[in-house]
Image (cartoon, rainbow over all chains, first blue to last red; front, side):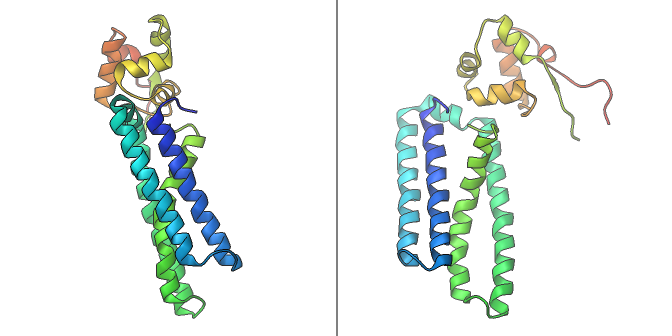
Length: 135
Length: 71
C-alpha cells in the first residue's frame, strides 16, 4: 500500500466506483434492491465525493500530488482511458445487437452505457495497481 | 520499436545509499515508478532518465543500455 495520500485516495475512490457499479449491475440483473436511478445516484455520489476528496488532498499535499501523477501513473491513466473507449464501443455494439433483436430496451441500453463508461477506466487502474504497474 | 532496456539503476541507487522511496522523493516520482524502472517494467522518459542520472551523479548510459543484438 502506497504512503502517498493522493495515490491512496485514487485507489480507494476507483475501487469504490467499480464495486458500486458491479453491485448496481448485479442488482439489476437479479431484479433486486433499489431502482436504477437510486443506484445511479449512489455511483454519482461516490464519484463526485472521490473527486472532491482527491482535489482537497492534492491541494494540501502538492508534492504528493506530483508524485502520484508522475509519468508512469499518467501513462497508466492514459491507457485506462483508451481501454475504456474500446470497452464502451464493444458494449455499445453488444447493446445495439440486443436492441435490434428486441432483447433489450434501447433506453435501458443507453442508460447502462453510463456506468460502463464511468467504471471501466477505474477498474483498469485498480487492476494496474494490483499488478504492480501503478501506485 | 520495442526494446527491453538493460537497467543498472538498482546498483547505482544502492551504491549511493538510497532507498527507492528516498530516490523517488528526490526526483519527484512515486516509489512504484522507481521500482518498475528497476525491474524493467517501465521505461522512463528522457527527462526522468537524465534527472535520475543527475541525482545519482552518473551518466544515463551508466543507468541504461540497449541490448547488444536487437530484433
